[in-house]
Length: 198
Ligand code: PRP
Image 1 (tube, rainbow, N blue to C red):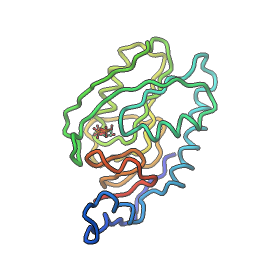
Image 2 (cartoon, rainbow, N blue to C red; image 1 turned 180 degrees about the vertical axis):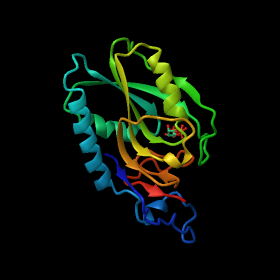
Image 3 (cartoon, rainbow, N blue to C red; image 1 turned 120 degrees about the vertical axis):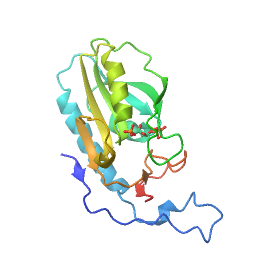
Image 4 (cartoon, rainbow, N blue to C red; image 1 turned 135 degrees about the vertical axis):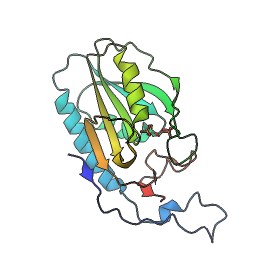
């Protein structure tokens, strides 16, 4: 079961009085989810995924949705005890803002054939659900043996389309979050913890 954050810890975005830029300030507040907590949960998900796919006879294909999911996917991959291959999909819908524009740009689809393969789609956050839903539909057309979804964060408050998340890290409240791969206008992906900016 994912961890549900029902009482979010208030997080200050930091005041930028003493700095010419706010780019380094979110790290000054208390994280919504600490790196230690993320690491523990990712290890649990890795075990759960490894058990689920223990009997498949070809390597699992991890399809990472660029760019936000890269950090989560890298840690998740290393927590698996089964063979896995990596593929990438490039999708973007935020275009620099804090909510989905509803317009999904797909710039790259997977390289390898997925016919008959077991595919795990890896997402950093499911928000409206449009990104993962659209990509899942495209992948299903490629004839995989199975398709499941892993998402570090589930923010159900803004859901537009129904999404079944098979492996979920944390259910979060309606806050804009950054860090651990998640960005605001391209920044903050490098932060080890996850912070709320709103
Ligand atoms: C973000 C995030 C997810 C998607 C979730 O990607 O990484 O892929 O939006 O939103 P949705 O459920 O409303 O579709 P973004 O478009 O910001 O691109 P990025 O991953 O490169 O940051």
